[in-house]
Amino acid sequence: MSQSDDDQLFGPEHVRVYQETDGARGYHWRGTEILLLTTIGNKSGEAHTTPLIHRTDGDNYVIVASKGGAPEDPAWFKNMQANPDADVQVKAAHVPVTMTVAEGTERARLWDAMVEVWPDYTDYAAKTDREIPIVVLVPR
Image (cartoon, rainbow, N blue to C red):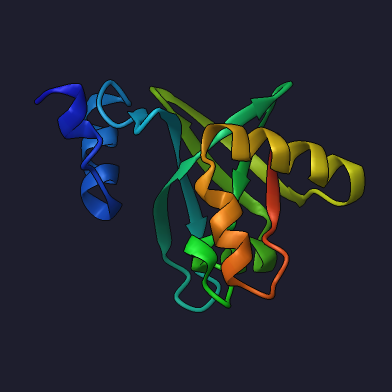
């Protein structure tokens, strides 16, 4: 499968291919870099893994709870609000993390950094009345 075929990966298929190849396939996606976030469901208690665009900020990972501009936050964000501890896979590395939500000038700085790699975040923000959370995942 070529790099352009990796660009078509989405959802559970993206997670499966990424996990099977330790990110050799699926880490690079449509000009971005992807991590896998595994949270524990706040209702089900089961593990859920989501592929998300990320950037690093020092030792931390930054992700965006955009849900494509939907009026509600994504399930993974709700899970992390209930339990801020999660795990990320970045290529072959598995890292336990704790979530914080960026605010104020930190949020503005990180929002600009994320829009730089995925300009569609600007469109997503225009589609919703909620302030899209910028999530900082701090290794523990």
